[in-house]
Length: 155
Image 1 (cartoon, one colour):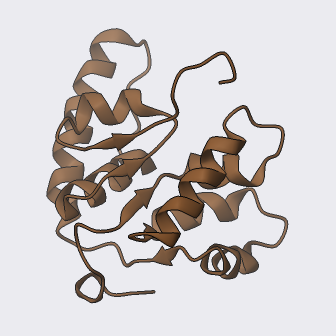
Image 2 (image 1 turned 90 degrees about the vertical axis):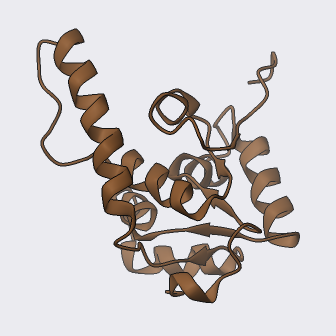
Image 3 (image 1 turned 180 degrees about the vertical axis):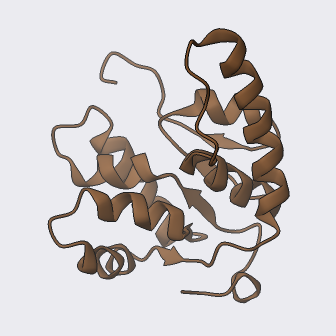
């Protein structure tokens, strides 16, 4: 993994787990968009994920020990998750938990969900986040620049 200080902040894009999943799934309605985003970003300023995204990808893999190699082969960097994410993650997740408690019969899990670590990481680096699931990020990380699929008849 690449330490935080060894990559050029502000020039790469953070890829959410769903982008990598859709890029691998030819049946996904977002397949073409996800592939184009990865190719475009890797060939220009660069693309990255963190261990949280990698762990989510490994869960669905038949060979989880090969997932990191596959991601790197696509030209995507795997960057360490810095401790500085903790406060931003906790603040966003706390807000989410309060809303969920008011709206749902079941409380939110005590441990933050992966999207909150992903959003916090992109937030503290001040880099765009590429995702097909913008709602939670827009709500709890409004400072993030999001790259999402255009809503068309194809999507």
